[in-house]
Length: 360
Image 1: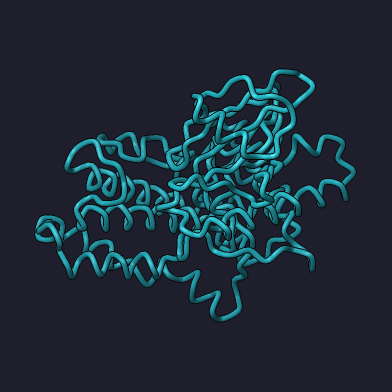
Image 2: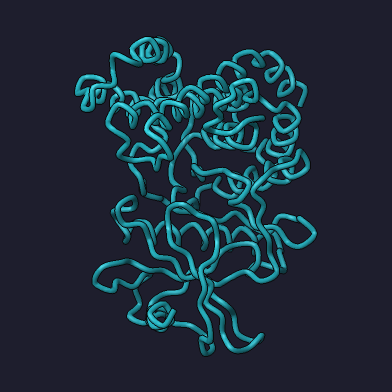
């Protein structure tokens, strides 16, 4: 780890670095815990930024600083006493930049929040706390002083753009797989108009865009050792978007009784306990900022992100598996089918979901 320690030394750290080791389970950036020699000095998180995904590192890091500074401001306004544990702290490089470029890779540093834990699986109680955390995160970004953020991944949750990518993959049929999946393609395209409703409503001025996290998983929340929420992390995709996308992204992942790529479709479906818990927590903290149409469309958000993910998997399958890592040649097709089964379950539970939201 000598090279990692050398890279860490390029940042404006407090205390002498004594150790560096890999940490975390993220799939995008390589992450290391940098340990200093004293309990009186902070430890740090050093990350290698995936430049192939986040191509504009200046924008990425400027967003990060704006987001964390704004949350810090909101916490001060609320009289919070533990601000350094409630948001990330960006550490600049010694040259003043928000990252260090070693000639090949881009690196960044934040202070490591001590005595915290993450969870990979969500119980209903965990879903409730996570819902409150993401609702609070959204509520931070209302008012006249909200920072202007750029898109770190353009069109990341843009359904119309994802359908255009699918259309391009269909026309190219690069690896000759279209004939095999044509019925599946037809089935998915039949719902295209329905699933682009959010963009149309936005264009009509009926559905607002807000600062959205765009990766609302349980493991993107830090908890203390008593499982109280500390803060939201993994802010790379935080940018303008629809809150229903954030709501839907959580439900697609944590609210699925099966796996994202489950080969046994009988295991795939909506976990309504998780839905109710997350929804209750989310609305408790986000309600003051949500419009009536946003509240009403939250179940649509679950359908939207599930459908969008199925479109992305199928697009990659038709292109020859160039984006998502696969474990076997039919993996992206298997993922697509599992996501469509989850979408079917959301369809079947729509009335129940609508009734529960109305009850809140």
